[in-house]
Length: 586
Ligand code: ARG
Image 1 (cartoon, rainbow, N blue to C red):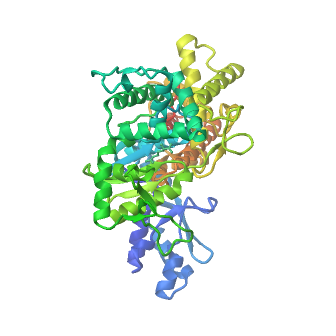
Image 2 (cartoon, rainbow, N blue to C red):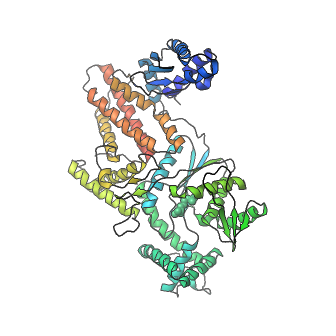
């Protein structure tokens, strides 16, 4: 475990503050806002002024005098009303580089301490192919899973399938209409029922929208769907077998999309998995008065006096006992909390569901469900079309995720050819490269920036090899690796950072661990996307100005090679945390 420069400086600042009888809590270093004055700064003297009745400037001068004795700093200065500017010494940076090079974790702290976090993302519904709306949940969720794992959490990724409720009844009723003679609908049937679905995937994907539209228009069709839903929920054996076969069929196609995106789940549990827990939960919450009857339904009041806009009650059950979306979420949370060590649940779901999660979290608190668990809704903005509105196909429908990826991969193929990359690769190798570049392009664009903002899905721009793109970072990494391969066998390290471009690169590498923490604290993989881009830029400036293998002085050459090795490790790890694969060759 190695400390970041900021943490090492905090130790020295703390000693300085305590020597002046000032609170240690104020001894904090932050990256300098004026890099011309230092690498870090401390603003604690200003806050201390209010406590001790001296000017900030005078306190800052005292602290600066103390810190000037420390070999860690090449320069300590005081600016304005009491900002302390700190420029690190070459020795301090060299020690940091040594420590991080010896650390498998590259400075990433162990914050999780093996505590358990459930990441709820993806959330596909049975019978519907994954569409553009699932992209962000999958990509952000996978990255947040990797970030938590890197920070020492024990992670559990769960897709929370939408596999229970009216949509299932709509489907079985529609299938019955096409073929009422199927064994699934025969109450006298001799079990076992067929395990394979009576429709193909394509048929299933067509069937659902048709059935849903028919139910909206025709009350008779809706009544059939409701009757089937009720029968399924009452465990009718034929309908249960049909449901199971449809669920498996649609999961097989969704699993292919997960695989393509490099997303891994520990469990593909669904709403149906808590079906037996719902009635007892509703009964218990009614009995203790947390849930009350209201206008023909059972609800949990979750409004709070401080609410600036109204928070309506959570709908827990219809009068006939049927469950709502929020009911399955509460029951699922209760089930998750029964696994020992659960400390956090992160729901990576569209920001338009923010109110739903607020209601669920408040209801859980009231009901004593998962009471010591941190509940987080990491919402996100929409993927938009060129018009800035949520992305639709030309015909106005939901764009399939697989089609979007196909499009990006096709554009990656064009771009690779026109830029002359990977020209010596053929067949399967070239196909793998094209896939990796196309998928990385989509993922990086999705992860960059603030997750709460929407962005325009522009595959032509995403696959560019210049600018803030996935392919640019992949190429930077591949080039760096080929440089290292050519230097195989040469002496590496110890690393020194002498030239300004070397210092910038070194300090950026040393801040990796803090950046991973920050990304987790904010649930923002975009913090790491920005970090990776800046790292590549620092590296390219360094490489432009500082010869590595052509450097005649052996010590300087060994030091620069060490910087290259460290940059490659940090960039690779950072891209891995974003879920971006680096091709072997480009
Ligand atoms: N299936 C849901 C939907 O399509 C998303 C599920 C999100 N996760 C959850 N625990 N509610 O909207």
